[in-house]
Image (tube, rainbow, N blue to C red; front, side, top):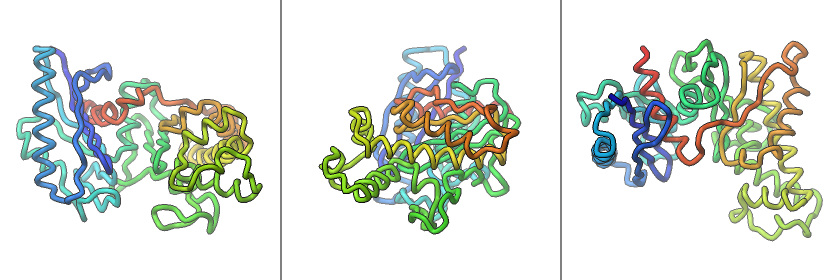
Length: 325
């Protein structure tokens, strides 16, 4: 008998769904649009139909399989309550009792659990990736925002209300840039992909760098891939964007290390494709900001999850953690 789980990643635009085996291999996957209409019941029905279809397809390929559960990663996902709560990028308003609704579609499913997407990535790293065997580590996810999942003594830290681990909202610069959450100076405002874009435009203005290839793009047009390409070509503005991003990221990670003393920090997300352009200044900044007792002890590692399937795989890992209980 081959045990598998279903992973569901609910994003602001799309929802990715997959059937994943114990080694983290995706046996079947699909996606649907995350709707703008706000009708949660219609969405759950569509989601359930796709899950059922994928399970059928997986059984056609591997007849002897057993579905051990469904794991869901979602913005503002509350593990304790099985709810999505006031997610700003979803059309479903207020508190959505997602686990309850999915259980109504799959009453015989052994386990159904929900957490936020960064927590799901951390669990995925622990079950399938580079954190196998680690009891204390932190996952930072770099993308449109900066998320994090904290693992202490082998358990994900949820806090008393289910929302612990928001390292991306550490205040780095008092009264600094406006963050998407409405506060000022948060790490996310400097180290997310949009944060890197903001840094690029600040530097273009600072140096009046009309000759930089980044100056040929509008604010809405520019993205982190363009900054990476310019840096590889030797553009000084783009190189400084990565240096400053690494500086701020290392500063925030150093705070996390002081709080938790983890074995490792894992980084995941689009900016990680830049490799040492982001890793080198981040490592240097971490060491610069650490107390002497922590220096040169904490590993900074890129995630080992497959970027193309990481969201599905991370969510599916939640079902395995539920099975261990």
